[in-house]
Image (cartoon, rainbow, N blue to C red; front, side):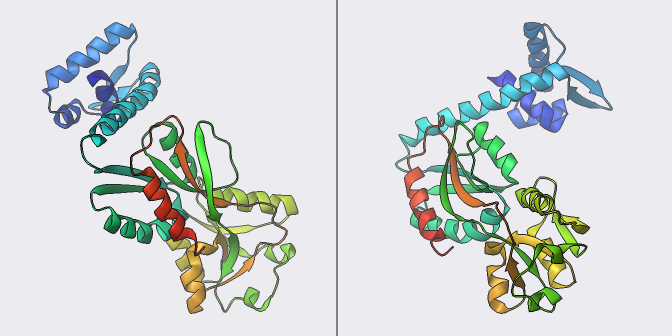
Amino acid sequence: MLKFQVIELLDKHKRITSVAEHLGLKQPTVSFHMKSMEQEMGVQLFYSRGGKVHLTEAGQSLNHYAKKINALVQEAERVVKEFDERGSGHLKIGASSVPGTYVLPEMLSSFSKLYPQISVSLTVRPTPIIQDMLLNHEIDIGIMSAEPFQWSPLVGETLCEDELVFFFNPNHRFARQETLYPELLNEVPFILHGQESSTRTMTLNWAKSLGVKLKPVMEMDSLEAIKQAVLTGESVSVISKIAIAKELQRGELSCRSIPQNPFKRYIYFTYNADRIRSSFFDSFLACLHDSVRAY
């Protein structure tokens, strides 16, 4: 199993010294495992360039499985330890931007008070990355904003709808419109979400389906950055209504429904059916259900 740790860490750190330090080994031991792997596989797995170690194409293929094997070993250790730790443990959660930023922080605070013996880590990434992390057994649970999906062996339970809306400064001319018609969106300064965003994908699909010609003036990965740009300018963007609930309540932003929008998005509680559930899995899900009732 050590060899698989070596190849994964080399891909990450690119230096034998860093891998040796991380594993508590000497550099010659790491080099021995690298040569041993190449001899066993009969192909070159590594090459040096610019003082760094890189994986060959064959090495990248092996690393794909090494990550899965390492994650499964960690999961096996976690499951066995839970039998002897009287309810203690670690819960690894991955979330996309909306639930990870606006739903989970307060809920996790409440969960930690109820179950102080359970440590929790939260990773916020775009939905496709959370999906891959679940498939690779890197996290226990995924909380994602997505369209209805079937990603076997992933299982998804709908928590609530994640409605997307057009939003803008309260002084924007759209604030005087009770309904936004598609043609009103033509050539309006528009802020697009980043390349990996599901909001961006749905926005562009909506515009294409109705022949709307959006006029992108900026592209941003951060929801908070998009909110600030809209707050202080004349641009319009699309966002989850959950993400701007407080600003709407304070009158700092205005929004309107997306006209003729056939696309629905929901927040899902997702897990890998091939992964053994933690002993506190159901407790976490119950707390999560309580927290999303407001949405």
